[in-house]
Image (tube, rainbow, N blue to C red; front, side, top):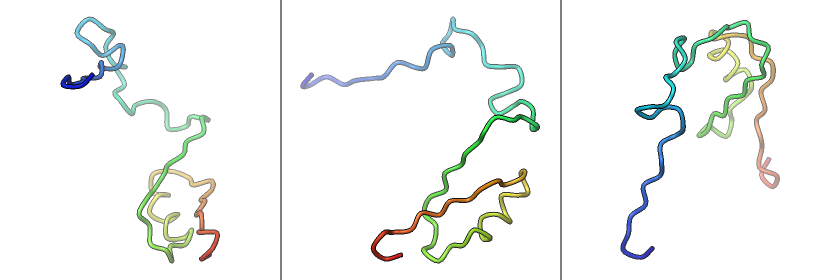
Length: 75
């Protein structure tokens, strides 16, 4: 493919003739959903604690668990 550019195809269902997005919107739906939800937060300070994340994120709903991976060698 030397000398050619590659353009990926758009996701199915959102093209000109594809089906339209849900009427509830991209992030719509019930807030009482029992589906598990995860959120990855990057670029945290090395001294970040669970409480530092829990407080700001609880304004959007209950926070069940926070996992802060630590470097194996430096702690």
